[in-house]
Image 1: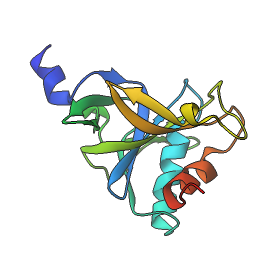
Image 2 (image 1 turned 180 degrees about the vertical axis):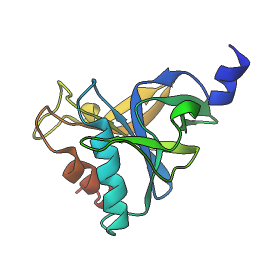
Image 3 (image 1 turned 180 degrees about the horizontal axis):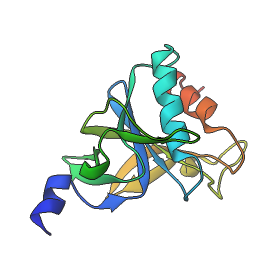
Length: 154
């Protein structure tokens, strides 16, 4: 592995991430699925007090690595502090360099259901199990993420 890759913090993945409170929400999905939009919506929800403070980790491309028994997400250096806002273009915003992934959101997920099976609400990255939200195409992900971050299972 090259020194640059080690410095970046692990393999690069096409995803966005926002640190909400003490953990990061890792947002995955195909191009055009709304990763940047959800990232910005989370930042705005944090500013509005709907969720804990939220700050960008990275948009479009991030690096993942195992640290102890957790997954750490880092911004990709050339894109650090940059986020795409549809209709405005690439914008600069506050960011943190890394955070521990505490939730994964999969946009345009084929296994999204009204009442999901328990196994679809978790994913494994590098051997670490993390809570997951599968979001179907055409469904707004923000209410699901807010609910996951602010409520508990019944």
